[in-house]
Amino acid sequence: MNGEESSLRPQSLLLTFLGDQVLGRDVCVYSGSVIDVFERAGIGEQATRSTLTRMVKRGLLRRQREGRRMYFGLTEHSTAVLRDGEHRIWQAGAVNRDWDGTWTLLGFSLPESWQRQRHDLRSKLTWSGFGPLFSGLWIAPGEVDVSDLVSELGLSAHVKVFRTHADAGMDIGAMIEETWELAELAARYAEFVRRWQPWETASPEAEEALVLRLRLQAEWLQIIRRDPRLPVKHLPDDWPAEQAEKTFRAVHDRLTPLARDAATRLLDLVPVRPDQT
Image (cartoon, rainbow, N blue to C red; front, side, top):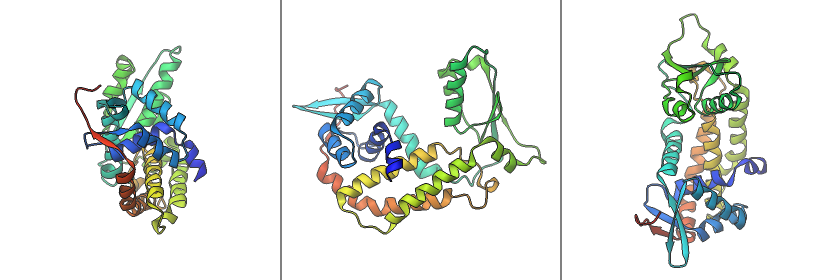
């Protein structure tokens, strides 16, 4: 798993860790516990401390001192990010079988000199599941609310959004293949299955299971956040997302009891004190 491990940033792993151990529990975790777990995942103490500091500065973590120890908890911002990830994994899923035929169309026209704004808009549209139908016209399956995205970039006056359905004679499958990089996404799913399927029957030690489940969830979320959840009936018959999701859930179920045992032993948690910021 070395190739994928190197592509997982410490912040992604830390957010996954907090979503697993802190989200919804009104607790903070001791910095030493985080360092211990991350060292087991091959991330050094200095890198972990730097990541904690950066995430506090970005408003993703709050600090809480207890005696001589520093604990870290979630902010409203990080809670919202983690709830979205939780929804993507456990409710929305990787396979879109419920599409009602609706598309969201977004058109934009920006001055030629606004290269940075154009780049930022395209990046955020891609992240939100859009693909470029034409240079200034992007499309996403379903009803996608982009109002916050557009206003955050200050581009409300330059963007128009519509809900629409394709004409009866439209070849939606061909449009999808032209608009999104299906081969690249399929390869990510196939590689996920190749790496993780052996763990469906393996029996790791508890501490190893904790680290494995952390990487499993971080890698899976990284893949499905890049997936626009295109309607499965218009995707190739051998689309690998369903098998990958089955692998994810099977491995997650196998690792969870061991990981929970390890977390109980390794993690120092304290209740959130509202007076701390």
